[in-house]
Image (spheres, rainbow, N blue to C red):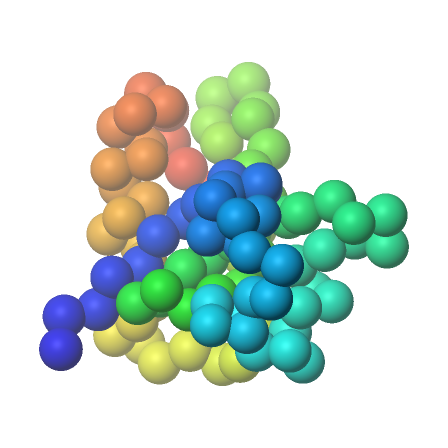
Length: 99
């Protein structure tokens, strides 16, 4: 099976379109995707399942991306994720530092 990993913005339709979100995110992880005020965080999606959150900070000479995975991910999944980052790096026209 081909693995697809995507960085999605906060308030993406995959989460906000549904009242019941168990199809895309386990009930135990839902509190990690929303703030106490109900604000959605940007998510990391793998094969239509939410596996973590991310945050982007723009610096003078680079963009910093911080990831927070719900579970320890295998190295091959991280390779897919980082390959996707290169596309984002080209889009932003700046170097990306991942933390």
